[in-house]
Length: 384
Image (tube, rainbow, N blue to C red):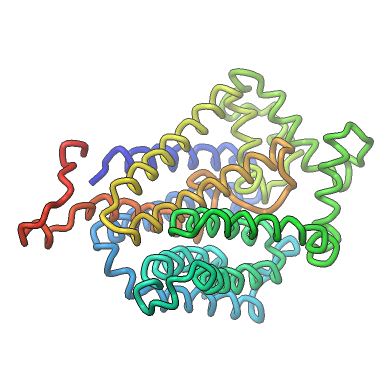
């Protein structure tokens, strides 16, 4: 086991529980003020999922690649008809007392399925060795869930598919010239996506961000309310922050929405309380986690494991960059949580499951069957 990876994950989770607690302890609503307890319960479930995924050889998961992907699509389709709408996004499916965010299940299944396709398509038939055909098939597998999530109005969760897919095809032996053509083609269609694919409130978020960056006047009581107060909270945190449970913070005074302070805008809350110093430490923890995942990918025993880890890295990087970026006005505001920090049931468990797959790639980095047969195996135990 890579215990440094596990310790890094748990440190971020513990910091996240304190961040959620500091974002909701003052709320009058008892259900909202106790969200940090729910976060602890989800983490406990996630720990069991993490170790289960870690100890099972990830090569067995390839047999579940197609069913996992289809289950994710099934959840997305069911959510489209039976889902609950929250803040204009119809992305939650209620199963008894629990609400499940189907987009998170779909992208976890998508990572496993894309890794399976990129690692095995060229072995199925000589025709499928063509980079164009592999790109077409994997692109189709990505576009279907991407479109379903976009139809639900969850632009943040949909856009995450792009860096995940890009990172995986980059490692999946696709020539770079094909990727350049895809990037240029997507860039060409961005104006059409803006005018015909986004809802009016999503367009307003983008134009508001551009206007604020240009120093133009915006309505801070309407469309610029969240962006303005987030920046005010982050800036007022200064170097060392205002302190834990300080009643004089922007969040405690109610200028950050109680429903989003515990997930989408959690970075603004912790930056105000812990300052630039605390924010830098948290981002340093994420950097260490991603570097460890890249290290695991480097020592994977096969392409399947390498692709799974790279997909997880792409997912984490996209979430971290978008969540922190939208709080700092670098990116438009979209509903996207910060991994291991933001409150979220389905997302916490899925993230820990994916990190469990990364751990599985490390645990099973040496092929014992080849070692028993006398074939040379990678001897890297001294690095553990």
